[in-house]
Image (cartoon, rainbow, N blue to C red; front, side, top):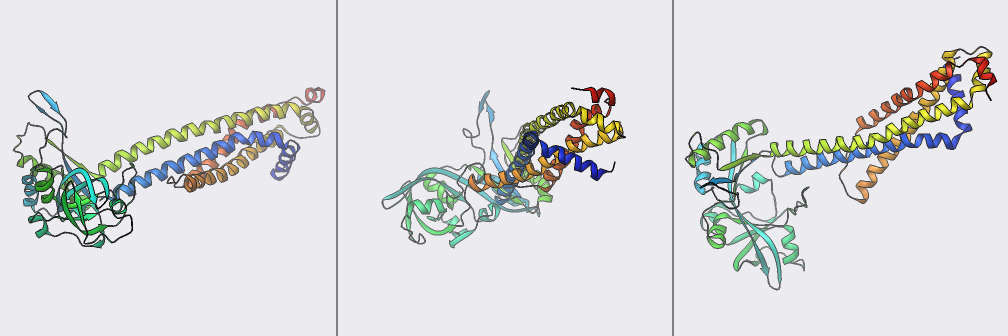
Length: 407
């Protein structure tokens, strides 16, 4: 018997039991839909995190103070300050072609005030290279200059969140005077909004001013919270990191056997760590969703067993008029495959719709992969063959005489 006739027989058998066929497909539909949705969420989250971190400066290198041991007592990075301007000068003296731009960073929290409006925020003192390193852009106004840094100028640049809270009437903040912890600052520029980061941090809730102004007028400290620099490209990031580490170690006069009292981090390391964690979660969620596929396959096997039992006389009659065992095997196997593939196709549509719905209503980032749809389709076909073969084989081995006598 040719394949076309076997397909017709399989479809006819499925039409006789539409509800049972649909319920058999349901496990496959849910499984495939869940797998595609989970992969789309996982891949979308990974892509969004990578884009967000790259937007902060994919070549950025950050030097931070770290925990250290003094007199047998372990101190945290926030309790001990090890970075000074001499470290910045040491890196600058390298004049390395692999390092472009360097900026000390000094930040402190406080209350920003303008008239009757006030807003708790963070003021960040930086140098002129900071904007390029962090890939920040001026929306209106200008960036402060090197002379402003040297003269401890009382000027600042505002993020959109600060503008919204200090200028609720929509006034132009350029040229206006605000106060931060009683220190008056003239607004000379505003930042292009960046929105919320993937870590839930408001990137627009910031005031930027010369680092010298923060050190002399707000913190009265010679220490830096961090130092930002940038590699010329991602390809030379490792070389730049090694040069920065050597320069700061020399500045701190650390001997070869002594541990660093600072930490050098790159965006590449952070991206790699976060994406690997995201990939692990995606695999875990996909594995949980794939259990539905297994349950769906077991459902197909169960229903095929029932179908063989119900149609024992039909099988005996067909074999008595010349049908071979292979014909019976193929008939039931094709039926299982059709159920599995049809459920898979519906599941793909459901998975794509589910992912789009999550993006539309929950605003989660998604990335629907064609590979995941193709893989799901292949898995469905394999599931149909795997779970349908044994019941089909049982049907093909029935004795025609015993099958005709079956009640």
